Image (cartoon, rainbow, N blue to C red; front, side, top):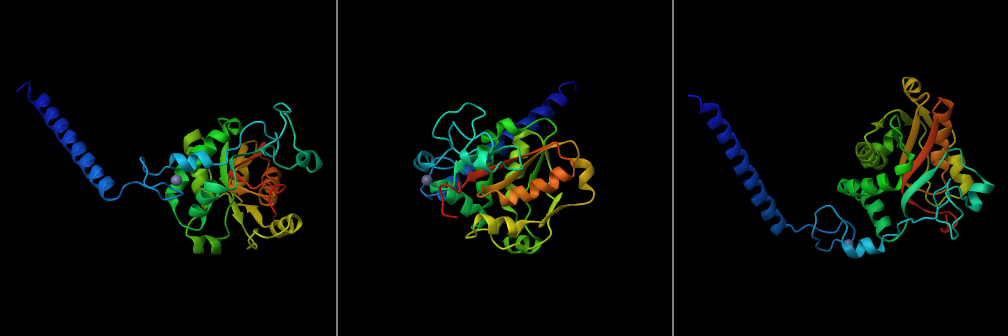
Length: 265
Ligand SMILES: [Zn+2]
């Protein structure tokens, strides 16, 4: 009688092991039938949901030195507080922006796959790279807020790519994630193809905080998350709303930066 609980445990353990074994066989079978593919070039790859070594090598990662405010690469090392000409001429409302990559090559492919290809699985590796690129932005009481989509665009696209990225980043950093606090009240034109002044006019007054959000935001540091930072007019408009509600500081974390001094728009 005394050995019975032991035997029960043993049986459970045996069952668990055999289930695990079955799962491994099933997984190996799936991998055999559907070998994992690189998330950007679609070439067969060793790992699921990853970028192949060749695409990884072409990823335009942002490396130090970078501008302390805009996070854009600098050609000379001016120290940790070094600023780009742009940050000196027009300092942003937000504190710092950081990004993992420049917008180009396989990084652009990942952004487009998530945004327009509906491939949600790319959010996990993108979020990992963002969490690493933005490590200096997080404090224990940080709140992660994604840049919101207007509800009609959300309905068309079915998900907000910024919210998927923000969720990944917040989970990795172990901080609060609030996808519904900020709202896009006014439907704005796509920013693509607009000049800097048009972009800024396009989004002015487009964002608002839900009434119950102000209490939660007050005194807290906020990290705003989006997929790509271009002129920064969208995150500037969000920052204005958050600072007015008493956020302690607002930083910006995106997957990529399309440096307006390097690109046409
Ligand atoms: Zn590849």
